[in-house]
Image (cartoon, rainbow, N blue to C red; front, side, top):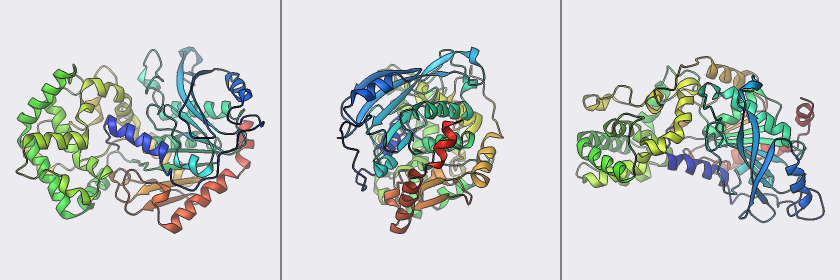
Length: 456
């Protein structure tokens, strides 16, 4: 469903956190005597008093009117079994004023430890509380029991975060995230629908039926221009025809960086995997205007290798980087589902039938079985019961070939015609941009939900 490299995963998180920096936003609440304003030591005291919370550090670099904290929250490893122990979940907080709205932000992966505001935070001039996803970054239970890495457990993490921080921020709450972070926000709403007043999910796919990949294949057969699609197919064939040279370079790189390919199996399989994923990843971040960057049939092997590395991030497939994203592929292979990739034009050159399956990226000593009820349940809730949900997608993004379809309860899906996986509200056509901004500000003025949550 998502095909990012480590660098693109982090770039996606950073993009979301810093999106719409040029958007018109209300000024941050001015510092002063009011409790909770920037520079008020009473706020730090209140923050330190929250049960189970550790203030790790206050970092510099936040925008004027904000303070930036790195935090740790003690969470149950298993929300259904107190005997399973606890772990410390990493949080970050961009604080401006207790009387401003609060944005609950997730990348769906590790936390971004730099003070960047997500687009809804900018538009609302609000506070921002980021939650690192369990099993990512430093938020890992000591026993690493992967059976506890489920969408429900993560939703319960977010629920405890909201309940705790409402003691400091009693106003409106909006949740948001891009890609897997957007999905995480929707899953949280499914199990705790009244925790926040609204959700803005960017570039978030809905793979309700993992057995049907036809939507992704159709998208890749029609996106962009025929010339660009043909160039991508041709460069894939060239890469596999020259796989011996590419693998030699790859193995030399791995040796120089003291890593190997024990998880995937070999550099040869890793190259094949990267080649298969290349067109999908190209369209996530590029357009037909980038056609000239695709190596032609006369390109040298060095150029071919450099392009494949730039598009797919070859370090991801080696153990040193991949071990950080085992939880991601585990989630794909147990609940979230994955995409399909066109292979007919490469059949005579392929060696590994399961090269792009999530199981390939997860060590074999970690058990995996797919829960076919998880995503249909989410899909059903979004269509029938979800409310105050706003989906922002790029029409050129293969990741949302299977988009969420929200129901009639104050929810919308809006498309940025020329955008891909980095779509934002500011890239929408003027009418839709105004509509999205109006929905967001209306939700942020809605006090009804916080009463339900505070008594939950």
